[in-house]
Amino acid sequence: MPLLKMSDLKLNNKHVLIREDLNVPLKNGEITSDIRIRAAIPTIKLALKAGAKVMLMSHLGRPEEGVFDAQYSLAPIAARLSELLKIEVPLIQHWTGGFSMHKHDIVLLENVRFNKGESSNSQDLAKKMAALCDVFVMDAFATAHRKEASTCGIVSFAPIACAGPLLTQELEALNTIMQNPKRPIVAIVGGSKVSTKLALLDTLSQKVDTLIVGGGIANTFIAAEGYVVGKSLYEADLIDEAERLMVNAKNRDAEIPIPSDVIVAEKLADDSESSIKLVSQVDDNEKILDLGPDTIKTLTAIIKKAKTILWNGPVGAFEVEQFSLGTEAIAKAIGESKGYSIAGGGDTLAAIEKYDIADKIDYISTGGGAFLSFLEGKKLPAIAALEAFAIQYEKVT
Image (cartoon, rainbow, N blue to C red; front, side, top):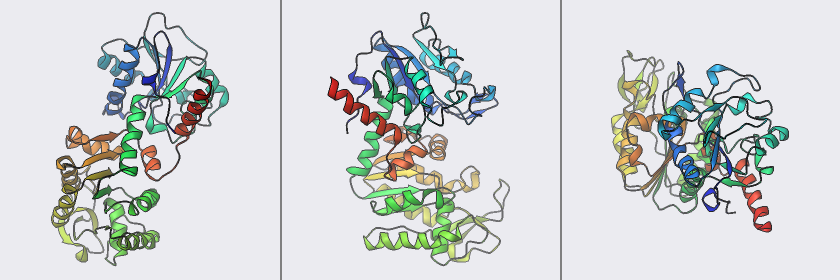
């Protein structure tokens, strides 16, 4: 079902409330990555250019709901927005009861999670949010999988509810990969546990030509092949699932390649003594922490031939330099490939920044859980709410 889009509406002199995902990492009150803020800028500029009075809202971190906590204040985000937009973006602390915008064309509303009822999708809170605006814009794909007041509940009470450009672009990019992909399709799924991404692995194993697994996930697949993984992070209770996925992929002439060689060490640390070993040579006291050079060569060759690439998660402990070669090689191979590429997930964004390949990936998703939920085939509550609104809106216009 097509969504009502912000770009289709006249916003001049309208109070437009935009739900963005400005949940950025902070260290000592300083923003360490502003990717999500910069991703929201085009939407904000479009609304301002259209003559709207813009109100932005977002969450930050996981404060105790209904309680103000300075460490989760959006003050640093307001400052960064002001720099990027080159206009003052005031932070409004108490806003659910209404406020004046006479002196400003844009404001940022304090952390939505400081309001009681946000996470429980309180209808009362949603009504108060909706009362602030003429148009509500859902532009935070990363929160679309949550049924909360600021992402879902507000849609039922806003005079007009629509999808913002960032959300629209995200859905179009994901649909390109899931519905009309060019083959061969290669998916790279890394991370610590099979259990957290089992549904995704299951879905992808039925769609892609090659499913590359990395990190702790790969260790479970290595164990499923009968190899010793020593003290590596893996899930013994999911070995049967790994075996099932490999059999299912093989039955449809697809592949889940298992590393032939790996980087091992006795501990994950900068000063660890590491070595390259065949997967058949891993000792009981060793941890598999990255892909080996032969495996890297094999996998990067597969990636470079792909017509469609999906990347979610690092393939090794890339936060430690000596265990980052696999993730770096995979990242650069994706960047060099001529295929259509989409990447998403928090650790993936960090790797993209670290290896400076953002301009070489066709679409970078700002979503984490929503990105995974969509790829797993789940219906996202916020998208469902926007679709329902669009149906009603079409009937009365």
